[in-house]
Amino acid sequence: MTPNRKGLLLVNLGTPDAPETGAVRRYLREFLSDARVLDIHPVGRWFLLNCIILPFRSPKSAHAYRTIWTKEGSPLMVHSRALEAAVAQRLAGEYEVELAMRYGNPSLPDAVARLRKRGVTDFTVMPLYPQEAPSSSGSSLARTYEVLSAPWDVPNVRAVPAFHDHPAFLDAFAEVARPVITEARADHVLFSFHGVPERHIRKSDPSGRYCLASGGCCDVLTDENRHCYRAQCFATARALARRLGLGPEGWSTSFQSRLGRTPWVQPYTDVVLPELAARGVKRLAVMCPAFVADCLETVEEVAIRGREQFLASGGESLTLVPSLNSHPAWVEAVVRLVRESAAAATSSPVAAAAPAVPTRAG
Image (cartoon, rainbow, N blue to C red):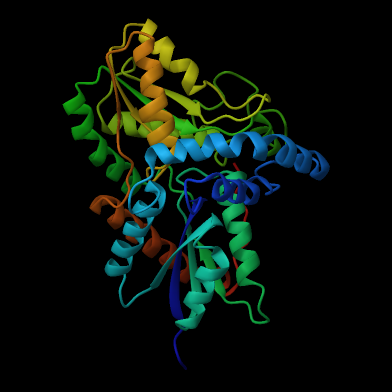
């Protein structure tokens, strides 16, 4: 019997094809049409998207992309392609590797088609989001399962779980951050994560009694909140602070990129930055451990606009710690996570023989 040929899909969120209003509009339309992202009534979503967001946000976002675009393309695409190449080299002979974006290009259907053309019948999907959330990992997995189950014969498929507390991920980020923080002589480190609406967190707590019910609900991971995005972010920050040897007053956590008027998870990064300056923090280092590749949210939102805000509030310097990108330690971490996922599936023949079903929610 011919053995199954294995393929690995590395899935990230996506990026426009160009820093132009038309390309950004197409990207935002696909992104914000997703009911797991903009989870409101379809009629309201259509109106908000077509009458408010696309006409007004597309030109502004295009301008922001132009400030970070490189000759090779968007930072997210450049770093993701570099990671794809490095992982493919490390897993040569074990896996065929393809990069896919949940929105935009390279699309999930195209990436799956390329793997199928190379004879892949056994798929491993690795969403490149350390913390799990319905609007990121949940949406990416749901779309991947939809694409893979379209043919009559559904292939074997498994997903690499969220790795917010995995030692390989944490060690890699600490290795990247340590020399940058030292060189910057930072007197405080801010861990800034991508935000989500509070309603996303509450919808993932069927009991309605735990998530966001108290100020300390995310202080530790428990059975009640172990799949909560916000709790996982705080757990990542605590683990990185320990690895970096930061004292209790030497670091804090915040959430960026909120959109609209509804409450998002707090504290907000753009509120925390001037507060830190007012407290006397002069040299701030910012890490963004929700992103494994530098992108609009890290380079433009933090390193450009965040720095301007911090300096205007009295700070002396703000240094963005680069993301993992294609750092060798991160490449090795990805390889380890993929192999561990395969080993876990092998030890459970029933699970390995059936398509995976998304069970995690943020």
